[in-house]
Amino acid sequence: MAKNIVYFDLETQKSADEVGGWGNISQMSLSVGVTYSTAAGGYKIYGEKQVNELITELQRADLVVGFNNLRFDYEVLHGYTAFDLTQLPTLDMLVELQKELGHRVSLDSIATATFGVEKTAEGLQAIQWFKEGKLAEIAEYCCYDVKITKLVHEYGVAHRQLQYANKFGKKMTVPVKW
Image (cartoon, rainbow, N blue to C red; front, side, top):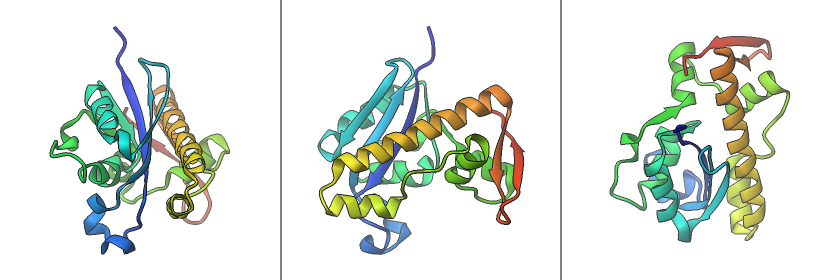
């Protein structure tokens, strides 16, 4: 039976400034979470009312793949559950890339250098959309981020490397082992 890889991202209702800093990520509250399951072959969108269903989907995955999900996305969800999500089989591509490079690199930098596509927005824009009641826009943006996460992971698996733009805009290659 094929492994169920669940690609995952979420957006929040509040910024770090609104909850007293990055030490309080669990207080930022979920606005929209999105998964793509390889077993189901499709995307699922979760609002705050469905957060327990989202957590259950992550728990049932053979592997959860995200970008900064250990430090950020899981911490947001820890505001809703006593279960330690860091115990799940997880590939946090940011963590792995940081180990290899010695510094952080953005998902947007990888997507632009590897595929020539850019993210459609950023987290602070999603928070503003939440305040304006624009949940469809958040869901669309979050789905796009999950799609990019999936493409980056699959490219890394197939080619054992990714491209990114360094701080001077030069296209660089980084080996990956996933």
